[in-house]
Length: 466
Image (cartoon, one colour):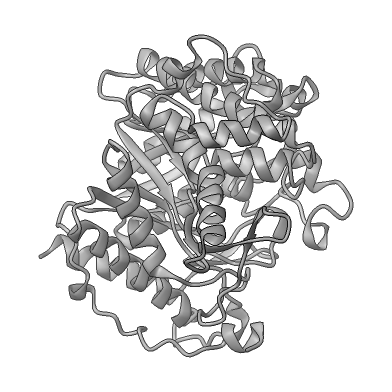
């Protein structure tokens, strides 16, 4: 079955009823974005370059040579975008703070105009009855810090702590929920090992050092947020741990799956939730000449108590042993694909959440990202011009049902943020991949609700009214 055929499979679950989702009345409903993907205004009001500004302006790094200079122009259209959240009746909005907008260069005092923007955003949200959820670091490292070594340098962890103090000191009287890092796996592995994300480096030992320094930065930032914000601050971190399945029952496949789970899940969750790195993973890294640069006291800092854990989920991985004894991903031909193309596997989300609940003393969990890119150009429109994105609607319905199944098995999942509020700059894919529940015409910046947004709104309202 070809990719095109698998992507085009009809989905019979489009009509999933809100009443069929067994979620509590106080379940949190939200949507998420990140600064570089939507804000634009790249050189306005004192903002300096991030690694994504540099990377996206590197010829050939991004599909169609797209960049985030304008993106969704959210910097100028923020009240309009908050009004959309209010219209949809969502409880919360997860956004990120642009580090080079708040602290140009990554050192020194705050940029007043940069913090003023987030001040206005938070007030606009609260005025509409929407809870602000602030992500401190969503990949936009100031370029000056990258020039000094980036996340492979230990000093960057301390710079993140300074940034956290500036942000929480200004916004912490109104922002209750703080996420220190978004997906450190992507920052380290995609940015420093595979080179497909900023800063585009391809050096495995640097990526391993980045893993540790990101987690150290998380712990230091958590301490600063709690010191600078009000006593009501709730601090968490967001991971995108892969749900790994062995391709077969042979010992080699089981060992390969365990190894992949170690590099994609346990390497991150173990130090944060258990206060130690997994021994089999550290031994593997030592064997590959890339030891973790742990110093005395680091693990205590990393294992700061968490008020919640953020989990992002898009797909699962089926792993087999490779010819070189390295894990090998095996595509599943029985699953439809998104436009990325990623396999659509809601049960993987249930299994991931249940596995975290089983393996860790985890705090309450929030799904901080989940969504799908599809080719919306093939969608019909209704009489009001709204896109009838039935496949995205079905995707959201199926994955929220997966959350409900996890809750039924005892997992304390308290909320869900759809990725994303609006179509945006999708990193290395540029503007060609659309995840939004709101359509954005990037030429005119016109916003249009999609049917997935209307479904999410109706489901949230129906759940609350139960």
